[in-house]
Image (cartoon, rainbow, N blue to C red; front, side, top):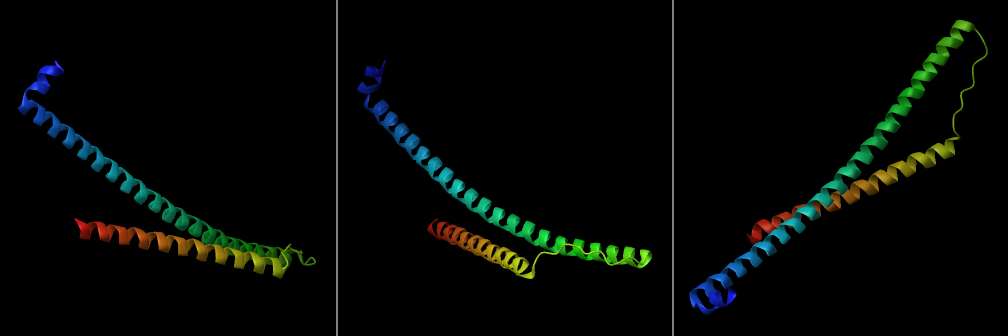
Amino acid sequence: MELLETQDPEKKKLIEASQRHKQELQREVKSISENTEKAMKNALIIGGALAVTYLLVSQLGSSKKKKSKKARVAAHVEAETDAEPATAYSPPPFISQVGERLVSQATLILLDIAKDKLSEYLSNRNQKHEDS
């Protein structure tokens, strides 16, 4: 069967053209897949960095609110019972300062990474639009 197809020059040209189109389509699909994969990775990195930053900030913010609420409740209980003040555990100031600084530095690093990835993505996107 293939022998008959290759003997006819017009069929041979059509088959070759079909193969070229098929290869070009496969290259384009592969290129689009790679670009989409890169964009998704960048989006996940940026989203993850923002999510971690949000969680850290919300945890730090909510822990301060909880402490102050607990302090108010403890003061209220003290006033009612006229007992000696209850001593609540509070971490040494040095350790809390180190923790706060570590969290703020981690947040800055994550935001910097997110900014770099976002600017890289946008520049790649602009270059692709200029090339097309």
